[in-house]
Amino acid sequence: MGRSGRTKDHDVSERRCIVTGEVTPKEGLIRFVIGPDNQVVPDVLEKLPGRGMWVTATRAALDKAGRGQFSKSAKAAVTVPDGLTDEVERQMARRVVDLIAMARKAGLAVAGFEKVKGWLGGGENVRALLQASDGSERGKTKLWTPEGARYFGCLTAQELGLAFGRGTVIHGALASGKLSNRVVEEAAKLKSLREIIDGEGTVGKEMKTT
Image (cartoon, rainbow, N blue to C red; front, side, top):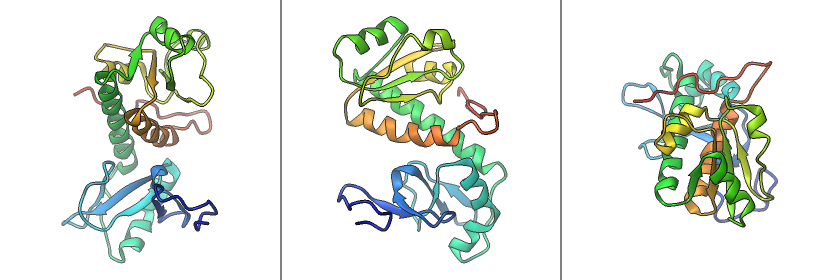
């Protein structure tokens, strides 16, 4: 058993969240490092050099980390940039958009109501159903999430449009594959960051088109 209570799996890498203290698979965490200027830097690609500090992918955890947990973990005074949580959300949204675009180029993604409906009803092994957060609820309810697939509504129509090379997209789907699994992992983090709390969501707040 791992410290989180789950059976250990060699392919599951776990890290401790500096805010909650819980040890969980790193797929649900955001990595940070301290730059040469002692400033906290988000590392959403998990490639920057230095000792990583991991935070659960929620706005509450990120906000709390910025109020002293980064310094405590680094055992030194560090600078937390203004708007760090919003910047992490923006980078995660861009990451998900870029991965969906890669999946589209690899033939693993389609967009548009009819094409998505065709995949859902035509025996295609669908890994995820993607629908715009600001799309028509009536239209979105006409599609369904296949058994074993994931549903994500954490991107706006504009963001999905960027992924598919269009102005806007309301409906999209991903076929099963390693690249689609990466989309699902990153989209799960973004979904957690953009969860609606007290009736207010943050979907698309900081997304840039350039």
